[in-house]
Structures are given as structure tokens and as C-alpha cells.
Length: 74
Image (cartoon, rainbow, N blue to C red; front, top):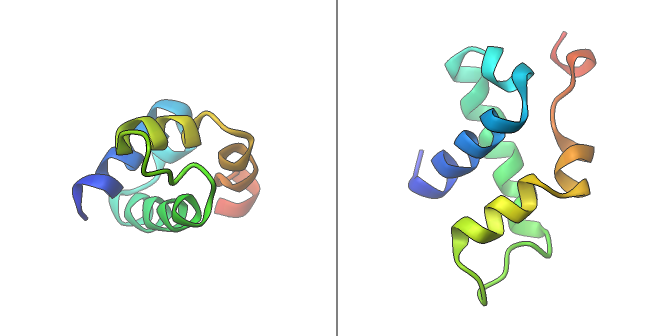
């Protein structure tokens, strides 16, 4: 996992108890999935720092719509 995906995973963990409760392997794949969604989003913007872009993404409706839910985890 590179620094970008690691940063997203840490921000995700701050926003989601369910993510924090996942085992490491599942967190890894979920962080990769969400990072790929981020890359395709308008939040992936070269005019801001990558951290700011990731932070804004994690606080967006796009993130909330795509984050894992208890229903999906089962």
C-alpha cells in the first residue's frame, strides 16, 4: 500500500467504525476500492494537495454513498 492509499485508509478509519472493525486484509481491499473511486471523482484535483483532496473526498456525499455498510459486509 502506498502513502496515498494509506492516508485514505486512515481518514476512512476516522469516519467509519465499521471500517475500523474490519480485519486488516479487508481494510486493505476496501481502501483500494475507495481510492479507485476517489481517482475517478472530481476530488482528484491537481490544484490542491493530495491530502486536502483525500480529506474533502472522505467528507463528501460521494464517499458516504460508496462506503461499506453493515449490510454489504455480511
